[in-house]
Amino acid sequence: MEELEKKYSYTYRNTAPELWQLSMYYTYGSMVGLCNIIFTAASFAMVVSRWHEATGFMKFLIAFGCCLFTIIQPSLVYVKAKRQAAAVTEDTHISFDEGGLHVKVGEERWDAGWDAVKRISKKPTMIILFSDSNHGFVLTNRILGEDRESFYQFAFRV
Image (cartoon, rainbow, N blue to C red; front, side, top):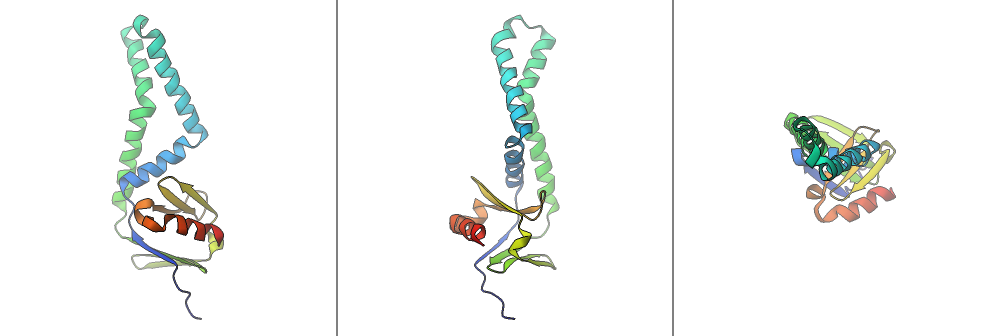
């Protein structure tokens, strides 16, 4: 059988900042993120309304609350993303055509039809093709370049 002409083809390795950004999209785009935002807003409201009458320990707790989801959590997520990125030692070669996805990492190959893509998520800086609820391919704007919109239309259409 004749192989279909490749429509889109990319070679990449996701970086720590890209993996961090992916985690932040999904944290702050969920119910957990909404709770984080409400908690942080309440912490800042405490600074405005109660700082002048708070004791030393209470000031520490308020300051900690302000920093928890704005500095501490994103920093810890970045450390995790850095470890994940460092664990990837080979580039991913991925191509897409009317027949599906064709992936090669090292000596391993995976070919699948478009039915293997369960969901496509378009974020401001990336497009994610999910093969299940937790796994997929992260194609950032850096990887897609000028093809971003045409690739999205292609992938969404097939």
